[in-house]
Amino acid sequence: MEVNPLPGDVFVFANGVRSYLKVENLQGDSLNPLVFRNGSGQMILNNPGGYYGLAFSGCRYIQVNGRGTPGIPYGIRITGLATGAGLSFDQFSSNAEVEGVEIDHVGAIGIMAKTDPTCGNFSTYSNFVFYDLDIHHNYIHHVGTEGLYIGNTGYRDGAGITLTCSGVKTTLLPHKMVGVSISNNLLDSTGWDAIQVSMANPCVVFSNLIRNDSYADEPSQMGGITIGQPSIASVYGNYIQKSTGVAIASFGTGTRIYNNLILEPGLSQKARGYYENGMLKGTSFLYGIYCSDKVCKDTTVARLPYEIFHNTIVIRKTYRMASPYNTFAPQGINLNGLAYIQGSVVGNNLIAIDTSSDQASTIINGVYSSNSVPGYSTLTNPSFISLNSRSVYALNFYSNEFALSGFRDIANGDYHLIENAPSVDLAVPSLVQQRNWLQTDMEGRGRPLGSSPDFGAFESAAELDYGNELYVLAYPNPLRASSGLIEQNFEIAHTNPAGVSQVELRLLTLDSNPQWVATRFIFLPDLYSDGNKIRLTSSWDGSLILPGLYVVQVYADGIYSGSCRVMICY
Image 1 (tube, helix red, strand yellow):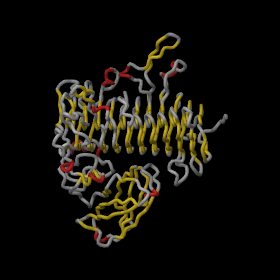
Image 2 (image 1 turned 30 degrees about the vertical axis):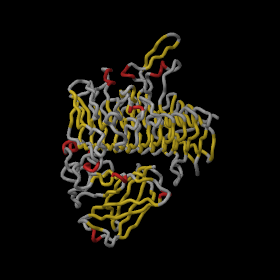
Image 3 (image 1 turned 45 degrees about the vertical axis):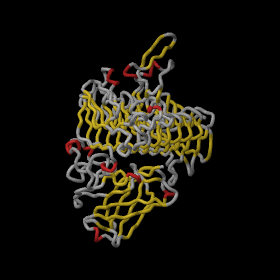
Image 4 (image 1 turned 90 degrees about the vertical axis):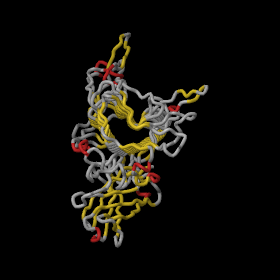
């Protein structure tokens, strides 16, 4: 079918199930994109034998919107695809936004955005740039390879991609991705990397929930978030749990990694190795955060330092490390392989790796520093942080015992810090003072709240000046989704808690256009305590709340008293 739409035109999908859809050579403009959205219900693309669900080829200024109807968070669903990409932007497509799309049970990729060079397009390929890609508020789960595959990965330290066309070899670099934003997505059970971004600058990856990535345990395809060559990115506010490989890896330069909560990375079975004739073979280390600068073999790439601050990394003891078991164990942060970049900084992170409860386990080393460049650890035991002389070690907090780290309730998934924890008020203030992007924590509270910042992604309420700082804490956080009631505790600072008779809690989606989800009124006789704090428990109807990131706004007797972010997981 041929159509000739004008910029700003809206295509509304009829409700129901159909097989696939391909859109070719349609364009909106920068102020008026072409919109493809659901109608009054859900549109499902179910294509058990095809190569794509929804594909855009040669298109520009496109918005795919599955949030067109209130109450339907994922109005477009793509499922049952044997191979290929559920949703793709290819053949020189550019300027695209995707929201409110669910993609599941796809044999290969969830969302792909790139154009590959071919003998048919190489003459114009080098001039192409993919501008302004925004992927947010989508739900991608149970896919065979990458959840998000953004940009071509063929940079290869500047060697590029070689094509042989009519017997002539031609080498090309992949096209650039300028302006990539990936936020507020839920990614669960991806066979390979949950999010992979290459060739991108500028690029932001923030406030995503990632669980069970890289379940296929495929070497070199294991990451929660992978920033590929030669990208420059900011990666922050992400919640990553049970990563088979490295939770966050960067192979670009100048990447900022901060305010992330990383739980149980490095679960690969293959990396643990095997015994042969009494000798351990094939074992390798994996990490919460890993950075490499091998892209700088290309001398045209700017050698910009990494900045890794205020991340919380928690690694439970899932196996022994001492012989005759296995010397493999996940590490915290590794910059040991940096050979070109000078002045990267690792500071104010909190790393807890539990080994203390097993007498047969050797404890984790503290900080491994090599003077060789690059310097790889040859220790039989992993380190909390590994780096060489090219990087700067600022103060970090690390412990072999969860109890010493100061978590509020680790057994129930609450990684906030108690007020008297040894990780509170002792981080380096200057790292925060010199960087305005560090002056809020993972949940949006000001940093520092006390005399100095706290280690890790969360600020506690120690020594809080209640008169000048609005403060709300929700715990446990993240919460687990439920079809029944979801209970959450709140701690609210107030100048006069005894004078408050009612607290109103408003639950809203966390985006540029917040949508109301639920409201809870709580009357407060005798519920306040502990000086200037109000402590209370609220319950939400879980049947009304999907997994995702939300903000809770607090009103005391109708007056705004602060807010916090909450995460609801699968």
